[in-house]
Image 1 (tube, rainbow, N blue to C red):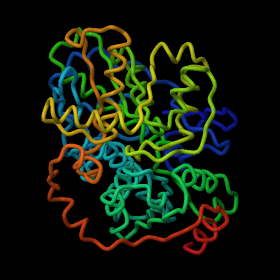
Image 2 (cartoon, rainbow, N blue to C red):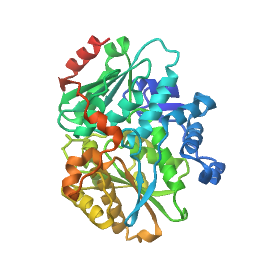
Image 3 (cartoon, rainbow, N blue to C red):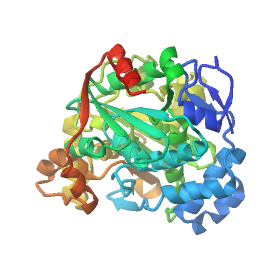
Length: 436
């Protein structure tokens, strides 16, 4: 598998180098040189595959000879022991992506990435430092995916006071090879610090750095799996297919477009934003104007300068007209999100997390705007997290208690261990070098 930089100022590299580096030297993002359609035999056999079998076929198709078949099967089987069922909720189907260890969709990407990086480092004698910025669920998924993986240290940067209590507990209580840094700022500040670290010559000379955000291609490859798995579960595959994706840093949506290029017959993907509506405004005006993120009840989507916008522009050659053929965008405020959570619970006895509620609203808006009959389309909303992770928001809205799964009980009792730090790169750099 060969990958190029979206800025096209760096040489093409193989999968191992792209995954271990995270970012190209020119500060672009790695993209596959070729995304070919899956063979017809794959689609003919799709109904017979388990999730792991399907994931292996897709990964092997993309990765090729970079990972031998038996090793790739081990990576897939070690990463996935949980399901992603498709559930009817009113007029739409909800793909429940929160059945992994951290109750969030990012388990699909982080666990695959952890296994893949562990495989690439199996004969390596220099420790790798994984840097990751999180607005919530990425931190917990990466922490669990890399916990106690030999040869890897993980540093997670998160905005102080801007993630839920459960999210914070999931990555600040683990210890071992996981360190959490509490940044006095926003998610965009955290993301900036990580990107600056990758561009700093001294850091890269003295430390081996890599990323586990969706800027790393190893996160996007496995996120394409569940779009195709949702299609597998549909009863009538002849109906037009639409996905609504709660969108923050746009890795999830980009992965859906990868799946489309591999032959998944998606008519359109809906980018559902919260009040951080930079992408929605771009789709409406053609003007891309990043801005400081604002805090919402769907906090994992509080991103004012989405990294994967560069990949979207690259895929569609900077053409809004071409992008709009495949993607529609809508934005919703906290009141609309809260009302959607209440309405779905009252109407269907189904509990949405705030991010999934934004996705549900996006699908509603799109169906109404296009004057489509929901009975004659396959309308799928990606459910990105278990609602218990946002109990302080959801429970007052539905006036009901959300049972905490057993695997979270011990984490909630753990002692928080984090390093409080300003959003100053020199401070962060000094801290990193002190841990050399």
